Length: 344
Ligand SMILES: Nc1ncnc2c1ncn2[C@@H]1O[C@H](COP(=O)(O)OP(=O)(O)OP(=O)(O)O)[C@@H](O)[C@H]1O
Ligand SMILES: [Mg+2]
Image 1 (cartoon, helix red, strand yellow):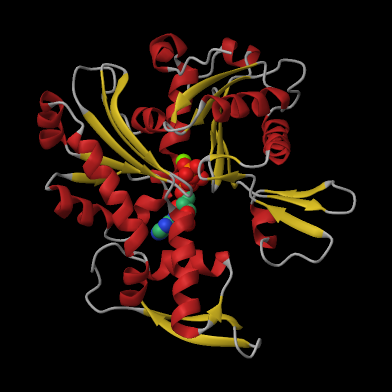
Image 2: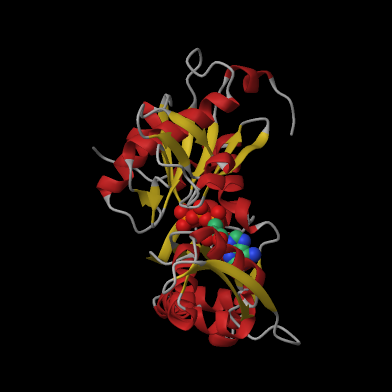
């Protein structure tokens, strides 16, 4: 990244405030924060004891006086104060003196959220120390981050599968032509695995174990030469004692079928609403996938088969959105018209 004097004087940052992970890009420095969106609080003093990875480690393992929170749910703020605290913590971590030159922040919002939910993101970010907050829709930021030709008269299609939402959008001439946002993502996949273990084995497992199973065994398509398995530990629901069982990739694929099918349905609906000229571009250029959920094995193949279109997962799917915000703050003038205008 080129050094410039203006970078010294400005404190511009881009934030991907995700349900699962928060990433921060600082102008002139690149991505400086990539941490889980988790805040751990002492329930007696109400003081924050940990944020990010350290707090995620505590999820489901807290002693009585500590509670680990995920302040975002389904892509939107579920707990305003903890979100604000989390953003403040990250801003202070990356900027030496955020109150001397308060940062201008580009923050992402899911495309399907309400005005109230948008204002919550803006207000929490302002109260956390931002001078002003510019909003960009998440699929647009992801498309910019993936270097799709968003401002050209060409249809580009992006599927961003996050922890809380899946965003599907067709973009042309700097605008979202058609889009669909569903509140289904990695969290629902984890929940489906928890339910499966409960039903099939009478075993209660935590969300972190469920996520581990999803990442190790999960798939959206039979991609394995031979199905694989792993040992899962949890609590027996009948005897209330710790117990281990062996689960395999086939049953986990089956357990994930509902959230996976729901996302595919949303992709189909977006394609149905796409104007013919842009649909023709997508046939030629294909679909790009971003977000952590796109790393589920075989998801690209599955979408390719279901839509009959070429699908390309981005090489670094979990940073597409924040890289998009980075490009915006490095070149505001160019991307200004793509920002979401929020009227009070
Ligand atoms: N290898 C993998 N296989 C399946 N899922 C994965 C894998 N790696 C990460 N994930 C999932 O990706 C999700 C996080 O993705 P990401 O960081 O893009 O979400 P987010 O931006 O925080 O959420 P959102 O955009 O919905 O607010 C988590 O649910 C995580 O479990
Ligand atoms: Mg996201």
